[in-house]
Image 1 (cartoon, rainbow, N blue to C red):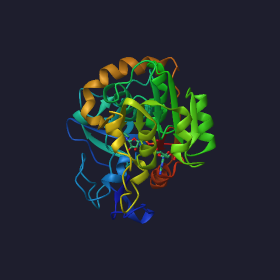
Image 2 (image 1 turned 90 degrees about the vertical axis):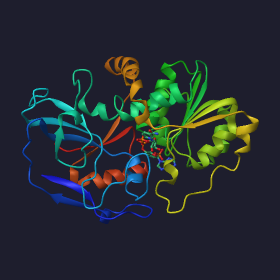
Image 3 (image 1 turned 60 degrees about the horizontal axis):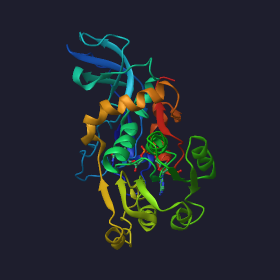
Image 4 (image 1 turned 135 degrees about the horizontal axis):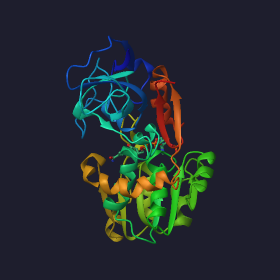
Length: 329
Ligand code: NDP
C-alpha cells in the first residue's frame, strides 16, 4: 500500500520534489484497531503551513513520514466491537491508501444523509468553519450585509449560502475567475466579483457598507474590506491564503486606524476550538444538506498519484467548492 511523505520543506511554492510516494506493507490491525481503505482524502490550505518547520496551532509535518489530513474510507479489517467491516469512517490519516486507526481515531458517518465525501466538506471541517465564523465569531445578525472572500471555495461557498439561510440582507462574494463569479450567483450570492479583474477596494465599493466580513484571503482583500466596513462591523479572520506561499510575508493593511474610527471588531479563530458547536451545526446544516437546500460542489481529482498536484491546484484556484482526491476510483 502507498503513502505520501514530505521529503523536504518547501520555501515559497511547493514543488513535486518536496514529496515522495512510499510503498509500505499492509499492516495487520491489533485488537481494538481498524484497518481502513481510504476512498476520499482532503487537501486543505492549512496543510501548507504544516510543511514549514514553525510552531503553530498544529504541529509541523515531520520529514520522511506520511502527511496526514482528513479522509474517509471503509473498514476492511477489525476485531473492534464498536466497528464492523464495511463501516464508513471519517479520520485524520489521509495521504495514504490504507489507514491503521485506534478505535477513538475514527468516527462512523451516516452515508444515508449524505455521500461520504460530504463529511470532508459541507458536513465536515470546512462547513463547521463557515458556521462558527459567521455565528460565533462575526455574530451575524438578520439583515446584515455580508462579504465573503475565497467565496467559491470549500469554506466560502458554504459561508455565503449559510449567511443567506441565517437571514443576511445581502451576501457578496469575491473569487478568481468569471466562471466562479457566475457560479456564486447561481448558488445564491446576491452579488459577486472577480478580484483579478480590478482592485478589490474599487469593486467592493458599490456593495458596502459591509456589516460582516468573512476573510479567507487577507492582504488586499482585508484592506479593502476595512475601507468599506460599516461602523461597528465585525470581521472573522478565517485564513489569509494570499500569503501562504510567499517566502516573505506581505505588508499588512495600511488602514488599521479605521478599526478605531469605525469601532470594528476583528477576531481570528481556529475551528478546532469550537468542537462544542458541532451539534448545533449538524442540527442546522444537516437538514439543509438532506433536503438539497445547500449546494456543496466538489472538485475531484483521481488517484494518490495526483494528490500533490491537487494540493498545488487548490492554491492556484483550480477548485470550485471542496477539493478532494478520490483514492478508490
Ligand atoms: P478553498 O476551497 O477556498 O481553496 C483555496 C482557494 O483560495 C482557491 O480555490 C483560490 O480561489 C483561492 N486563492 C488562492 N490564492 C489566492 C489569492 N492570492 N487571493 C485570493 N484567493 C486566492 O479552501 P478552503 O475553503 O479549505 O479554505 C479557505 C480559507 O479558510 C483558507 O484561508 C484556509 O486556510 C481557511 N481555513 C481556516 C480554518 C480555521 O479554522 N480558521 C479552517 C479551514 C480553512 P480563487 O480562484 O478564487 O482564487
